[in-house]
Image (tube, rainbow, N blue to C red; front, top):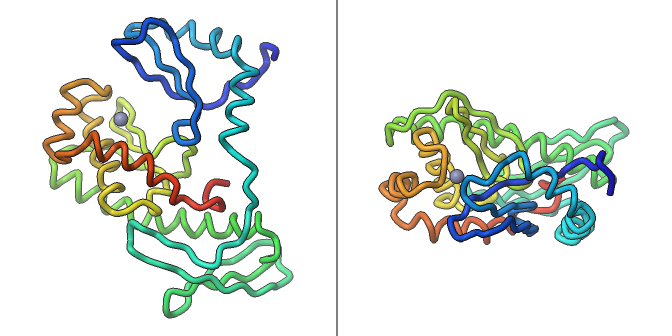
Amino acid sequence: MSQDWTIPEYSIRESKRARQVTIKVSSWTGLELVVPVGFKRSEITKILQSKARWIERSLARTHPAEELKRPESIRLGMLDEIWHTEYSIVPTERVKVSKQAGNVLFLTGPVDDAVLVAEGLNQWLQKRAEDVLAPWLGRLSEELSLPFSRLSVRRQRTKWGSCSAEKSISLNRNLLFLSEPMARYVLVHELCHGRYLDHSKRFWSLLETFEPNARQTAAKVRVEADSVPRWAQV
Ligand SMILES: [Zn+2]
């Protein structure tokens, strides 16, 4: 592939044991580079470009073209909610989602189109995630005395959350599909990054004061990633 190949989103992990750069691709982490400590970031683009073909092929394999179908029900583990969907076809441009009594989501519009259904549901999910995650992060921040400056909620393909040097936290709206303890773990993890940006020993020991089994929990979060339905990944 040529120079104008667009490098996919990737993450970098420094490892004390790494002697050379390793490129990993998995459905959960996406494209990940494990590099020796102090590795020059300027070299990374070159390395990625030299492996472009392999990376593209591996990424395509981790995202099998699973058919996009409209869901019969939606389970939001974090909120312990199950929603049942009802569809009514109406000649409008967009799918509208409204809440009915008894945990029913009523979808109207071009509901025979799974892509437009997913779009409508994702808008509903986005709003739900903002309404729930913002106050929760605020409460945790106060409770644990770990301040942050700003929160943005959006869909992220490979991360549950992130935190910038300015203590600006970004959370994945698909956290709603995880169980409550797993989602809490992610929020606390990002709040701890407000103090230490890296994954150093002092970061983990801070995190472990709030989440005693932090490392095991981190592994479980990866497994629970499977509970995100296909429509929420588009
Ligand atoms: Zn982290």
